[in-house]
Image (cartoon, rainbow, N blue to C red; front, side, top):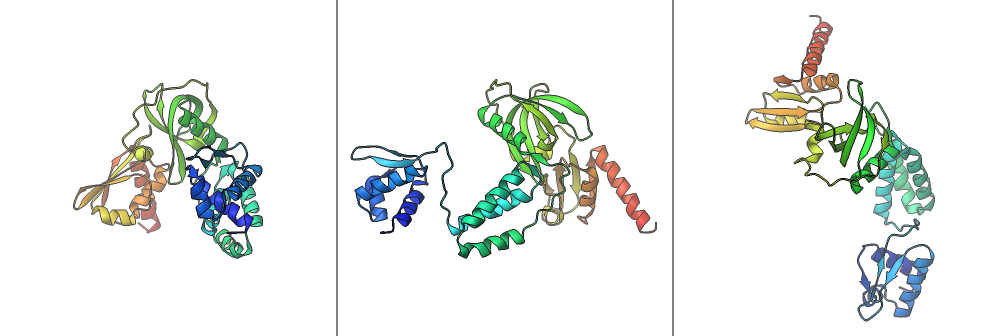
Length: 313
């Protein structure tokens, strides 16, 4: 490999796996001399890649995180995957993320070789985001909550419940969970002394006083927690049909569907809209009984009356 540019890119690709490479390994992989390898390492450092070196017979090189963002070499598939993900972020209603994603997409398009532009344009032109989310997500809130959860720092914020009641919450944040169409914060509510989930788009004025906590033992299945508990009433429905039949027809994605016996199953979910859930349950097309809560029962009765009226009786 005699082309310096190609050789340097190959060297960078090898170093990006995170491990320490012995000099002899790199020279063998690159087909270069030790002197050429040292020149290529210096070239990477000059353009912003912090490469650490260790001397001695077992010395080597390792790429570490730096203060700046240097150019990133991407394979063809990685470039297309990056554009697909950025396209989703740009189309999603996330305050602060849309502009950043659009900016990165523009830079990627300018830098990509012609052979990839048709693939990128095909992805961009044929991608559309459809969301029933009423409120946009604040990227700053996600960043603050994510950092606090990672560093085990307390947070305090204002929260509006599903029925519009405001409250102040003091929480030990554990994890951010993307479930169906919404982001949730799972954390220990210090005042209620229990695990709770909070819709992130209902959180405002997040503050972290700087105090830390020792993480508690989390719930058994954190990812399913918003669907089954989370501090708000859960819908519980029993279907008189096998689990496989219901799973194929149930359009509601959140929640837990479990088998009772060969001919019956139970569905538990904390829906954001009882009206929408009532329609989703009816569309399954098998006999079912709602075990709770009263709000879901009321919405189902209202839906039944509307359908009866529409059908002339």
